[in-house]
Length: 61
Image 1 (cartoon, rainbow, N blue to C red):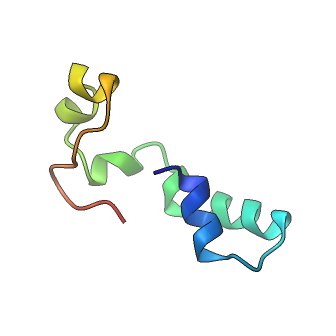
Image 2: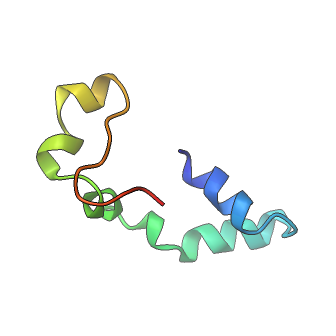
C-alpha cells in the first residue's frame, strides 16, 4: 500500500500542506522503516522484486 494513501486516510480533512507535513513527520519516511516488517533477505529477494510478498516479522499497518 502506498504510504500516501495511508496518510490521506489518516487525515482526510487536511489540506495538501498538512498532509505533506504529516508525511514528512511520519516514521514511514525513515529509510529502514520496511525492515520492521520484513527481513533484509525477504525484502530484497527476487520474489519481492517481482511482486508483493507478505511481511515476515510483523503485520503491515
